[in-house]
Image (cartoon, rainbow, N blue to C red; front, top):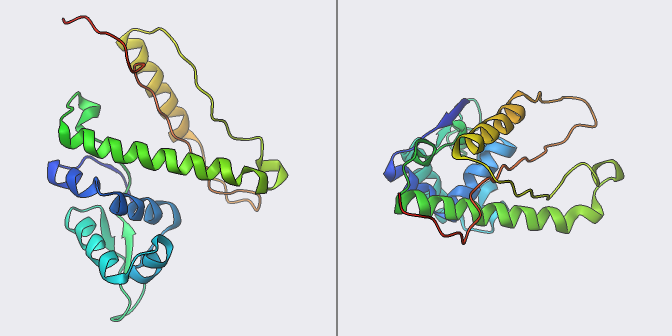
Length: 185
């Protein structure tokens, strides 16, 4: 699977649909699946699921997994490990904003689910995560360097195949504090 994709505007619009973003997240995190499997996971009918899968495939986010299934069961897999936006290059428009709003909602939902499941985790997993925040006063260059350093740290972490390893989610949310007044430049 390629490391990342920067979709065009049409791709971003397609990915801004919450169901499609959830499907892509599941395919990236849990591996290949059929429309039936995804429909059950997302509490959808298979017709709607197939429609959303075709939209994801049309924009290159997923591909058919030819090594699995048969003529009756089509398996799909993610084509990339992550999605980047033109925002990463300084472009922010309504389509990028709509996609990022969908991502933010999904992050919040995932964090709420993680907090709700904390009491049921095996003891050794209960204290390894964090929902912390820090507020620093930085220049744009310092902020960019900090985000890049955090991303490098995550990208350099090695996956483990030991018996006590489990999927572990890391979200990096870094942004200027909302509600500030900015001087026009």
